[in-house]
Image 1 (cartoon, rainbow, N blue to C red):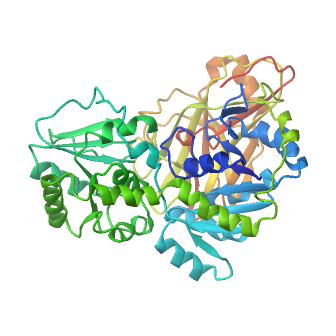
Image 2 (tube, rainbow, N blue to C red):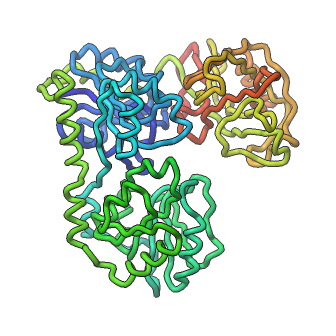
Image 3 (cartoon, rainbow, N blue to C red):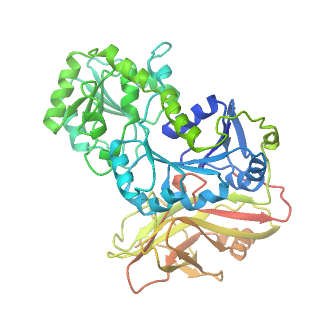
Length: 529
């Protein structure tokens, strides 16, 4: 049996998706799985959540203390990666084989894809579109199609499902969408549905990733994000499920998991003309324009039980168990010893760790300010630093250091750079000390606080994803000695003569990729989440 490592990409408990389901199947089939959470903790490094399945809560400790033990076991180590932007961090996990599982088509990921594909010994993808693009772009690589699926045992039965308090009985029917509410949602279509069916309600369940919610319609109800285990309780009381995606480069490549889950529950589905769902006709009704979509919803409401058995049979055949069997065939062929029995005895040394030689703290506030929008606030924006064609961008952040011990050996400030505007160029970033108060929900270019350059070395950042660091020992010691001087830091670009942008990840992306301060103490008596 193998050891499977899933590097930090998405938290285990955040929107159960393909990675979590596949890792569960590996564990069920006897492989030891280490799933690295984005959210990090300094109090424990590893938590066992089921047979053979472990959550890694502190990747720094895992890399330093546990990877050497894993490698010494002689068991094949497979790193399963679904996010191309972290390809250059994967060697830290010392894999015998890297698997790239290409799930989606996002423009910002594409610059990192060549390196990811080159380093991968095995490549899977989730849709016909991705299969065609990957095989034509990388003809030297064998790419295997692996569509998404569903947990049929969960969504194929409503036994024990109870009506949630925030979804009370309603005089009309319930039209529902479960999933991320993001820029790929056709909000104009959603508004038309609300207007056309005023006697029915339209319910949305899932995280809002910045898209507008049509709250002006009284029959629109946004319930927010729910735990994966709760979704079946809501799905039971939805009459028609919709997938109102815009048609663009991202959605033509997607193979929505929600479609398989809706079908497992025997629900009617109406979708826009996403290629992967067009293939599922007649189990899925397709609206090729707004008017046809609305007519399909109307027809679905007339017979909410149509094709019930056929939908469930389809989903039963497209379970995550079935997908694992497809994966197993590929890995067994490509990886010697993949299914051989192994004692895992040396891995018993991998136990939760409660300290290390450093601790990490994370920002309590951050925001981007833009001279192109001098009065606007961008507290939830990704990190943008530098000069664009429209103006200058800077990044502000602040750490709480009130509980940090005084005996510090050194401190390192780090941010994760997602991309640089000129991949081959070496660029320079500079850290400033902020000299006045600011509020992350209010600060703008016009109201930005004063700042001054601090005496720490500049870090020259090269294009591509990766961590960039500064020695911040003197600054942190000053904040500990004089807390009233801690107004945070501002990061700017030194390059001024031409457009140049560094894009990074802010504190809202989860702690692993969040900006952080690594603090090395002389006496490790304190830990801070």
